[in-house]
Amino acid sequence: MAEDVGDLNAWQVRIPAAAARLRDARRVVVFTGAGVSKESGLATFRDTDGAWAQFNPEDYASPSGFRKQPRVVWQWYAHRRREMAVARPNPAHQAIATLEALSAQLVVITQNIDGLHQAAGSREVLELHGNIERFKCFANCRGAPTLVPTPDPTIEEPVRCPYCGAFIRPAVVWFHEMLPADVWERAAEAACTCDVMLVVGTSGLVEPAASLPRYAQQGGCYVIEINLEPTPLTARISLYLAGAAGEVLPALAAAALS
Image (cartoon, rainbow, N blue to C red; front, side, top):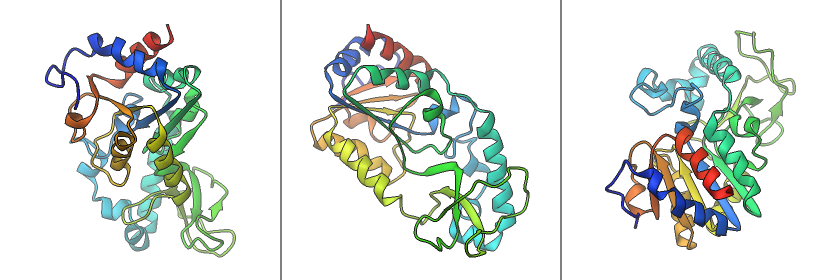
């Protein structure tokens, strides 16, 4: 059960306990969601002002939506790519990268597709939902995934696969698609064997990713959640730090490394 979950405004007093757990850990997992990148100016998908409040996900993030209107979906993702291209890592991303100096193994598992963890210096990043800067053949003509060269970002029309002529698409996970099997297996193994897991900026609603903290708990891991608001996970984890990732994580990293 979480410690002192009812007092949602006292994350500062819990930092020493969280820092001590990190210092003692050999294997750490940081599991992140859209709340981390939101502080870099990128809109989330599920907030009241997020993408799915304005657009039907079946139209813009599903294979059937792409088949029906490939040009519209292509342009929507081109717009998102432009937004992400100018975004920069925020203090939360940077703090996560600095924590690598603390443990023998630190793995970042992210639901984000923006590449900001890598830009901040994190070395082992498992992207559950892919990366918006990678592209693949819609037909996966040479095996799943059939990655193709990144097209000119100024092209407004869908581009064809150089191998088979089918359209290409962003190499991200859409609705009704499975997570990349190799990435998921590595993420599940990391969650099951870590000593401490930081769960940061994720709603805890998107499966199967939302299962990872449960896997960690089943393996005896100490789970620390950092979020502005409680989630379905909050009542079950070890320690809850209510606050913005860009404030809490730098303080936690500083305390753990001191």
